[in-house]
Amino acid sequence: MPISFHFRPQYNLMICVQEGKVDDDEFLASYTDLFKSDRFAPTMNLIVDLSRADSSERSRVALESFALMAKNRLQENKTKPMVAVIAPKDVSFGLARMYELLAALVPWKFLVFRTAGEALTWLALPEDFLDDIYAGI
Image 1 (spheres, rainbow, N blue to C red):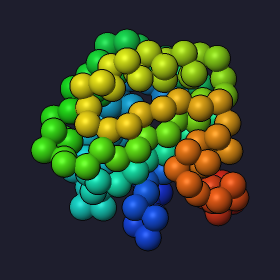
Image 2: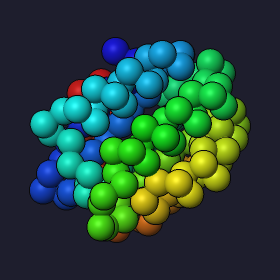
Image 3: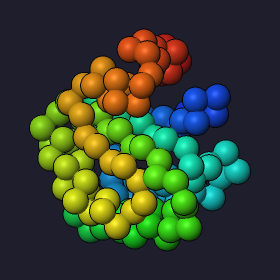
């Protein structure tokens, strides 16, 4: 599965891991399903790990569609969840930074990092926090 979601409610956290090529349709469908899921809570923080992803298929149109989808789903949220994107590859980093500009529409704190360590520090999580997720992949 190119996109998997892992929930850690005890940390008020969701983790999205993208692997390989994920086209725009898969990307948008995965988040549509997430936003409809009973496990999704709009107040949860989110880690998006793109370290195993090939983001070359992602378009600006998909990023804009996602921003609108997230805005509509989270618009009544009183808190601003934190979103940390781990994007060590140049293409993923550039696209995530482009989305960061679009994310101004969405009520969340959104930052892009090159390493998992930086993202975990920002979220005040231990450095080995993601080890169990990677062990299961």
